[in-house]
Image 1 (cartoon, one colour):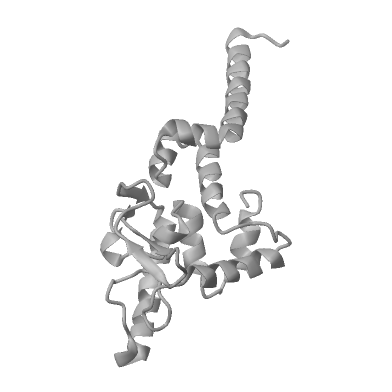
Image 2 (cartoon, rainbow, N blue to C red):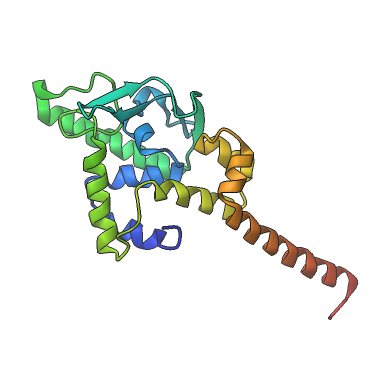
Length: 209
């Protein structure tokens, strides 16, 4: 997906889940964390999301459960860019329109950021099916929703973000795990650094060979 980000953004333009997909791609949050994100956890002024909980499909398939902790058991802060803050501001306005239209039928007691038109939490399968239809239309039928998280990490690392910063954003239990998971990206970056240092050395010494 990291090689098709522009194509993906074009494909989701105007889609009902466009803003959710954008936040996933540019924040690195898991699907279970996105659907449980509350407005109380969103700091639009400073561009920070506090990830505290997740909504998961119950193991007995009887429904969904709201878990008051993240996958690694720790809350974390995820930074978002100003453009992503604007996307969330648009989501807030859209949700207010839905609330007004729904009237007494509106029910968003948990103050969730991403809901359906009546304030209910979004179901994993609904999001996944919608996502699969989009990427299939792009000619990438094997791409998973989770690959948006992977793309965030690759883009961040390739843009010069530190492994430690990416680890904290993703909620990995250690920087070593992040480094191992994205070893190929790290190797590419190291080679690029070698080339930069080689060029700098030659410029400084006047070496042409």
